[in-house]
Length: 235
Image (cartoon, rainbow, N blue to C red; front, side, top):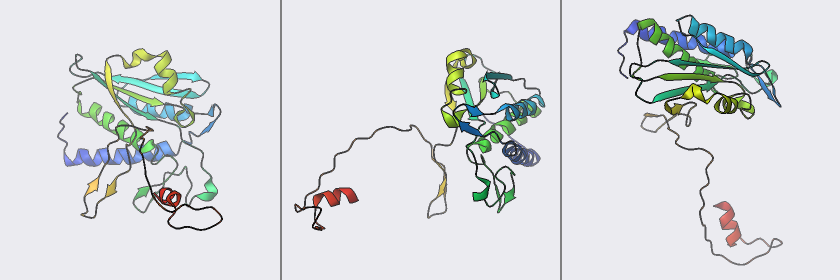
């Protein structure tokens, strides 16, 4: 997709991302595990922000106050596979005493937004919302259907979130072949000054390897720096 924005639209988009991220952080959608969580208020906020630009959503509540938000933005070519953009609305608990700032303040400090969820993942939720809000304002239609899904309960097993939706409401993702969500690795800067944004293609896999070491036989009661076991441990 190719969109040319005016400098004013770029500033408007950036400001909307910052505002949305701050406001999302200020809604303490804490997931305590064991089924104890509440995404109702933050889900209502997401719905209101999308409705503000004419995008209607569905609220899905598998358990009391465990709320998911899903909507489909129709593309210009319905024969093309759809794309799912998804995020989660819950955050892990925050011990305020261990923070330099109020973890639910959304404070801007040292050029960054501070708060629980600023990285995981209310920042990306804000970016998704800001972009589709801009699409609606300028009348842009994506080349394919875009399904937006904001899930509950990601931090504690997704029992009331993506797992439930995939099992009970698979029709919401009909025609979609790919999905994009959280970062595949944090960005980092090379010695050359170039900024690298990693792309993750897999997670929690197994990579078997064989290590061979030689050395002198030994015993735990006598230190032997040339012991093969020590070499393997250091490896």
